[in-house]
Image 1 (cartoon, one colour):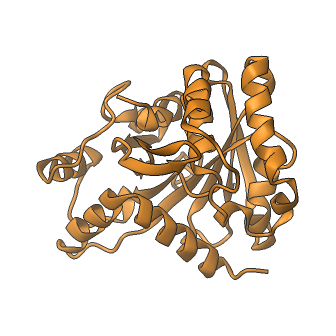
Image 2: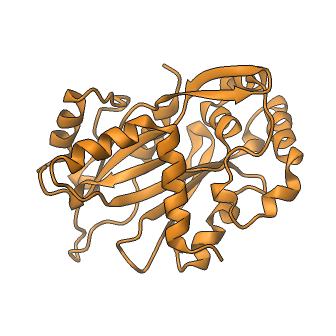
Length: 264
């Protein structure tokens, strides 16, 4: 069993390598004396039994994570589930998957073909850390993107953290998510404004914002091309009736957060 701290550290190192803005955010917040706590780490995958939510969640379940609520995103043809750890200082794990059966036969054939290339490797215990295991062309990426930007992202980047999330509740020098957004924008960070720059509200017990994904050079089988990669999210949680912070997610907000990786 891979130690949980090692899993989380390897996920962060890979994510930070692909996402220059992550280092920028950390440097800016630490310059104010902030200690950064991760609210959740998110993954994307296909709903093939070899690669679905249960497979990516396995190493976290081994370390005591338990499943929380499940969510549906009909327009994007996604389902999702989050996992939480008894130790509240551990980040939640949010895993979504694309429902291949809801897409065209051409899309299904391409996606399953990628998975078939590496079927044996998919049994590895560190699948969530493995990155892209298959070969894919930019032409195939574009065919997938025409139907699902999400599906094309999975094809290009494979199994890795799609984003980390700063817990705004743990910050000391910002009194609101809006104040944090303004600070980061003054330093050049660009935010996803689809559905509003801040998604959610105190009424639904969760506010979220996210940057736009960094443009990332990806090596495809037919050449290197720049495509949207990973982004950073920020979450402020509000107390429930019993006084504890809300643990779940808000589908209407998450639906728009997914679009942080859409091509602009």
